[in-house]
Image (spheres, rainbow, N blue to C red):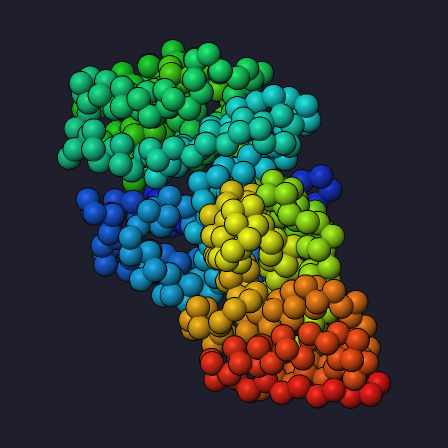
Length: 486
């Protein structure tokens, strides 16, 4: 059973379900309205009140998660926590409340997951389509064919700010709507340049706001289920007649949802006008279903991150045989070190594959260049936290260990760094390692047992190991070596 939790700018939501046949069946959904984005001040700082409300909401969602026997859970945070300057203050208490790590994902990763959720709902594998998702803090536009993404854009315009800025105190009039629509158009006018505008067969809207707008249009006889600019204009006139967000009343519209409808409508009109979209099809799917599909594919060895690593390797023209050898050695060493969990196993392997990408910048300090590239590259499937961890492994592959700061306080991370360093050392020394002749332990101190034959056949090896002993000694770790006959 899988669970996806989405910490959006307007609300926190979860889906719980399982893969059945060709789809994912959702058995439980929950929503906690938070309007987190409204708690950002002009300097991008989240208020303590907003953080407190968010933590309380996460506690309630955490209780829901405890009711199910879950095989995999992923909690993702989107635009508001991407831009909040004090997000680091919120995260520890938030993770404690929900009971799982929280990943602040990039706009591009958010777009990828949204598209995955939509594409797996559609039975038109070769269709070229545009997917639109209007959230509380950002809007994602994803162009794709079938299940493949061709282009993904995340634009920092969402329903919360749009409503607060253009409809202050909830007032709705023609001038406010016209200004909000014009602003939305300005944010989308450079997404697809006119002379390079791609073609698509259909346009889908995946967000809760878009689906809510579509439901209002159908339920109140404003138009049909497929959204057109005509039906949106008719809905806009009805909202203006209400005159105030507090007076908006539509059948089955949840309390607190009216504000996002007003801001979302202005964005959707501006977007469709600017991109020349005549008809938009609302669809179930989106971020949470995408997260669940991603979890399912990871469990079935179809991990998008693997492809991202190989694409990155080729993009920076790194030596693949050398990369694979380091990855093989690092995996074998890490296994001998007996980590407490497998949390770093894949990240170490991928870091080893990418350990020399910094050579594309310069052979000097290539490990530093590589760490920067991997931390900041667009690697679909990876979270910011995962890329930062991989950057540490790549940075720590050689040289002094003080540059890793307190990261080595994590015993498993320290073991991964040790495995990476020794793997790189053996590769550069051109040693074909026979792991039946090598033993490595790290329990308070590092004990490395090598065969006397290996030491004799590679005269530079004692020199490099002596250097390594010094580096570990600088961070207070004793490194002992024994040459034995095997």
